[in-house]
Length: 120
Image (cartoon, rainbow, N blue to C red; front, side, top):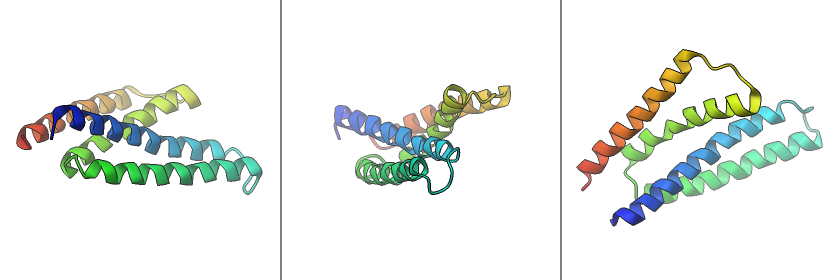
């Protein structure tokens, strides 16, 4: 497959992971509302829509990207969760969490570059 096309699928995959992380953020926001209130129902309806879109993106990506590469990259959702926790919920992030996020990023780079070399 052409590198340009594969790059587009990698971007699509990471957009999907971003969406996947959004469902937990919306779920946390929904927990602030009374159960079965209109804002609660809208938030949880949004969760289902996000997961539906994510499932379709994931299946399309797996047609092109090897499963080992895609699964290794999925750990980026942990980093997105940390970012959302800091920005949206003013959560305290420990040094261990920062180091863990750094290890995840390094792992994604190493595994993706190794898988790329093996599939060429």
